[in-house]
Length: 80
Image: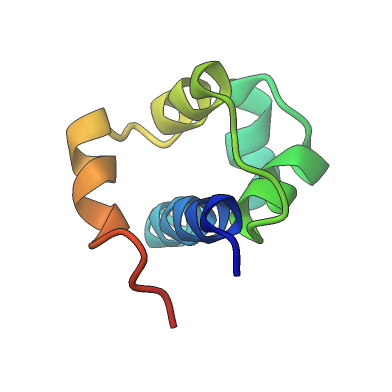
């Protein structure tokens, strides 16, 4: 797996965990973030890596700070 694919997957897994911990469906995050449901789904599944502006919008919609998000990513490159 290439490093960019690994990063996309790790970021996506962290976003999905955050959303599920808040008991939110994709629509409840994508709408306030100003992105489509399919785009958020692509991020969560690691098919696409969000741009920094879109990542910031999603984190705001999840009421998550950058520091909290960073702590959820875990060690880089250590994916199952």
